[in-house]
Image 1 (cartoon, rainbow over the protein chains, first blue to last red):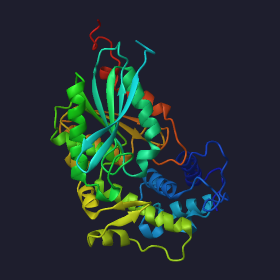
Image 2: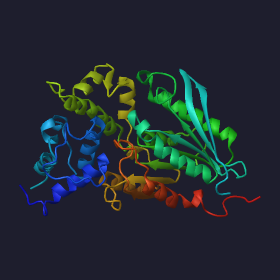
Image 3: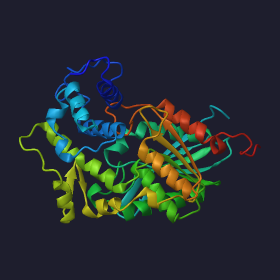
Image 4: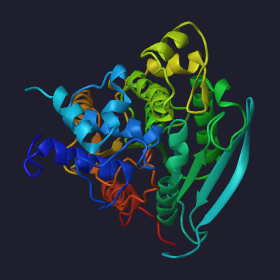
Length: 87
Length: 286
């Protein structure tokens, strides 16, 4: 797992989540649970998050990738992004 | 005069297949009319999410002397008809109707203002406008109809994921149903294949506007434009379009779970549209 302070992907994902879901200054960490824990995360919000990630990181998310395992925690979503970035 | 009372008039406009709900924002009676603006709302649930910000901007335009007509398209919002019966051609007719209605009652130039798919509709209308248009104001325009519908169809996958129903929906299933001529349901909206097909065919790259364009685009960094918007700006400029563009960073208010007020967007719109919105001297004093 990347170091929390130098993990730019993780930080960007946290910022996008805060902005897209309107979480304000609520602190997020890699361990923060998403699906089933954040009431803000309705189906429209899920799509907004995916679209924001696509625009920010420049990749396309396939329909098959819209899966609960990627949205379990902030960390699993960051891992999902990392796996789609050029090495 | 500042703080003079602007007016708000809700009414129904008779149209084919039922009435259309309209909301007219009027400048104060003491104020000279500077023109009319027709607002075109975004698709499905985004219409509801964006009502607040659209109303704030409409109010700002009324304060500046513009009459703003917000029309709920056929099957949308508080208008008559079912969403399942909505067609792109009907929506185009609704816009024609709204433009004609406003032009008969308000002197001065006419502006089309659209948000998201409403902006793509404005671009489509501007190719063959029913009345002469002075300009287009585009808020976060959808640039590809096909891509916008693909993103909307994803709501089915997201809803399935959230409800934790055993089997996830197969990717592409919704598209296959539409291709077979079947209506599908997404997030409580029944979509006719004819509507989706018409939207799929729209591509902003082929709709380079011939009137001045004022474009506000959301960017998380609030300074650099997202790549697809930057590409289209270049292409439109190469095509000779007269184009102003600025970014705002408030958030995606058309889909946000929280209702946002978007001060940056309102401010950026006022700044960008200064030449026709607030510029002194463009209003005859009397």
